[in-house]
Image (tube, protein in one colour):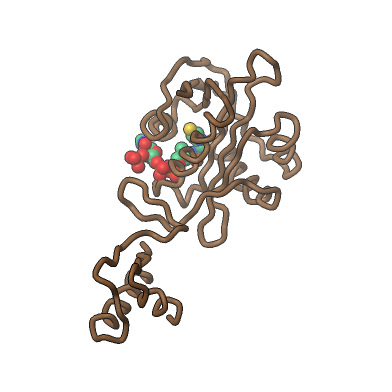
Length: 225
Ligand SMILES: CC(C)(COP(=O)(O)OP(=O)(O)OC[C@H]1O[C@@H](n2cnc3c(N)ncnc32)[C@H](O)[C@@H]1OP(=O)(O)O)[C@@H](O)C(=O)NCCC(=O)NCCS
């Protein structure tokens, strides 16, 4: 409260409006205090999201995206393994150990760039760009992996992660990014096309076997401008 009062007394004050219900209520209280003269708000006060929030499609979000650290490996593995169990990961259905994830992200194909999304202190999604092949002629091509915890989907987290990662593609001097999604998963395909700007470039028919059935995998590609 003391901090907010200090801020509100600045002539260029900006009220940081949080999206969650509790914070909306808190802001209403501050506004009331301002109205009765206990807090002074300048004429040009602006309502805006706090720096820890992303605005996606006009919605304010209470999470933030930051680079992946080794301390995130446990959460990242947990999210990935849940996707493996749900047959959402084209890497396979077998759960990975934390060491396998470490190997994937930091060793064998050391990821070029990776991010996590954090909400209320917990990692709820992650993404990484890994080299397609560790070969000179394919150096400009990378594969995007992206997973969001099931309970947190459809709130813009996947888009925020993809946006952060794809922004790095130019800096990394990449030319081509691809992603692989199961053909029978319309949510993943629609997400890659509509939210990330990928286009379907091919199909790997019956590449993936699970429980005696074969599944097609689509390859979606996006050229870096
Ligand atoms: C794909 C995935 C990363 C999306 O994460 P998310 O946090 O839900 O993503 P967003 O909230 O930013 O976007 C959701 C989008 O998914 C798509 N989507 C979600 N559910 C859908 C459904 N039932 N049918 C069709 N499209 C759907 C839509 O394009 C939707 O966009 P909209 O909200 O603008 O309509 C997440 O579902 C996931 O982890 N899936 C399993 C792993 C995977 O398939 N990874 C490859 C991704 S390229």
